[in-house]
Length: 124
Image 1 (tube, rainbow, N blue to C red):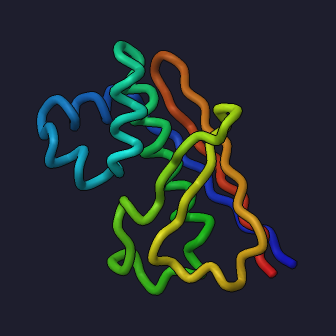
Image 2: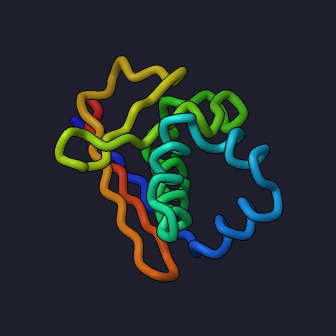
């Protein structure tokens, strides 16, 4: 077995600026409907949650890069961050071959200025 990991950090204001300037076209290109609904439910804190999910998508791409033909063969929506029953982040992956993947773990966090995500993949 092998372990692969991916990490990403982003300034929350970068995501906020993109959302405010580009609006729904940006949101609908990067985030799934579930992610948008979740982030919008956070009112004043929504940009932190969007940024954390953006960082998670970057981190999972890095961790799964061996399973991805090239960066043009996946879209932002192929990686979806949802929460389980206890509120822990969970990753749904679509359109990526996961046959040799034993497990994927995700951790995300954010503060006033930054969001960070770490993804660990256990490969068979």
